[in-house]
Structure formats: structure tokens, C-alpha cells
Length: 275
Ligand SMILES: NC(=O)c1ccc[n+]([C@@H]2O[C@H](COP(=O)([O-])OP(=O)(O)OC[C@H]3O[C@@H](n4cnc5c(N)ncnc54)[C@H](O)[C@@H]3O)[C@@H](O)[C@H]2O)c1
Picture 1 (cartoon, helix red, strand yellow):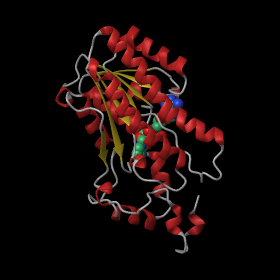
Picture 2: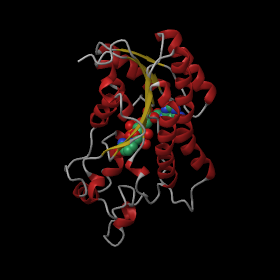
Picture 3: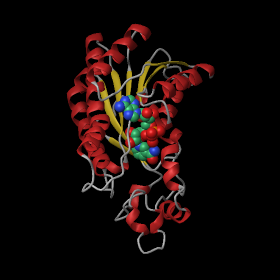
Picture 4: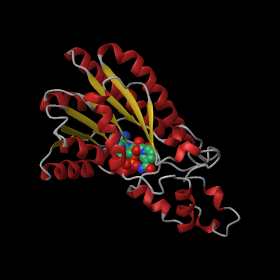
């Protein structure tokens, strides 16, 4: 299928994990893709891998928290590829600390990357779309952490919850221009960073899997499929929503705190495995 032939998609943080899967999926369906990644090395490899597979991708090193860099990235995309049609705000950083211990700089960086970054990229892309008189799609990668608190995840949860509201307000403000804005909230997805944590304890992983009705951790492609639907013509009347993609985790969620709640190990003899 070539649903995105003639379209240009920017994916932030597409050097690895979920963003890379999204970029690959867009390219495999005909889109020209911009890898807007802070790490120039992984960004270049991602673009080259997509090129080798027959897709079109360019890497533009970008820190999404820096408005000057974001503006330049959008301008460079238009210069090199002619336009922007789709923006996926995916870049993320992880910090596991109790709020009591969290350094202010870490809090601010997390919000800068995961909340301010999507705000900045969205408005630069939206201004381009409006000037061009074109409709478009903005998709924000949120998390189930937007919906449930997580011990040692204060800045992460707060930024993702803020991203949900940013999604709603952008949807309201940009709807008149034919721009849809949605968020996707993944549950636990198997990317290298998460794998390191899950491997801390087999029992821990087992406990987590028991909370997922579909019985498995997500794959990056599970998230990419939903993102591509939201970017497609079929989703033209879908906007302002948070779409949870989590194997059913949230369906019956009552009090389970999530993978980062290491307090569940207390009293099990596995406290030594706490990071
Ligand atoms: N993996 C999961 O279980 C999971 C679950 C829910 C939500 N998410 C979200 O999915 C998104 C992707 O995460 P992932 O799991 O693929 O992790 P990841 O670490 O593999 O990917 C994040 C990417 O963002 C890049 N990045 C970091 N700061 C940046 C910046 N300032 N500007 C541009 N790029 C930057 C990183 O270099 C990296 O390539 C994140 O927003 C994350 O919060 C992940």
C-alpha cells in the first residue's frame, strides 16, 4: 500500500525505538520522511537504513526543545522536500527519580523535550500548512503515564498528561484549517531502553505481563500502525483524542502502578535489584 505517496512526514526522535518504526512505516507507504533526531549518528543511520530499504528519508539533527533548531528543521524540510504534511512528535527522554530527589534541571529538560518540543514543532508546522493552504496531521506520542501516576516518573507523567491537553487545544485551534491533532498513548513497548529495565527481574516482567490482557509487551510497529491510521485519509474526522494502544492494560487498570513502581519489589527479597 502507498497511502502516503507525495506526502512529507517529520518524525522527531526517529533515531531509535518507536520513532524509527514510525519513520520506516511511513517510508514503506511512500512518504518522504524527515528524521528530526538530536543524536546525529542514530539519525543518519536511520535515514540510511530507510534508503537502503527503498524508501526516501533525510536526517536533520534537531533538538526539539530549541525553537531556533525546530524552525530551521521545518524550513530545511520545505527547502529540500517541498512541503510538510505530517508531524509526529515522538522525541522523549527518561529520568527515574522520586520527586523529592529530582533535580530541577532534569524536571525542566523532561518538560522541555516532551511538552515544549511538541508545542514548538506543532506551531511551526501548522504555520507552514496554513500559509500553504494545505490540510495536515499532527500526532503526539504520549503514554499511559498520562493517565496513571508512576512512582519515580513525576516529570514524565506530568509532561505526558500536559501533552494530552496540548493535543486537545491544538485540535480546537487548528480544526478550522483542516489540521487534525491526535495523541497516541502506548503501554509498555519493547525498545532497547525499556528492555534493560525489564531484564532486571524475570518475576517483575511476569508481574507486568499479568496486567496486560493480550499477554505481551508491545512492539514499536504496534504503535506505528495506529500513527499511520491517524495520518491517513481514513482518519479525516478524528481529532483531539488520546488513543491508548497498550494491549488492554488500561482496560482493567485499578491500582497497578506501572513498570517503574519498584516499590512492588519491597518485601520480596529482590530489593537489591532496585536501581
Ligand atoms: N517504549 C515505551 O514503552 C513507551 C511507552 C509509552 C510512551 N513512549 C514514548 O515513545 C516515545 C519514543 O520513546 P522510545 O521508547 O522509542 O525511546 P527511545 O529512547 O528509543 O527514543 C527516543 C528518541 O528521542 C530522541 N531524543 C531525545 N531527546 C531529543 C530531543 N531533544 N530532540 C530530538 N530527539 C530527541 C532520542 O535520541 C531517541 O532517539 C517517547 O516520547 C516515549 O515517552 C514509550
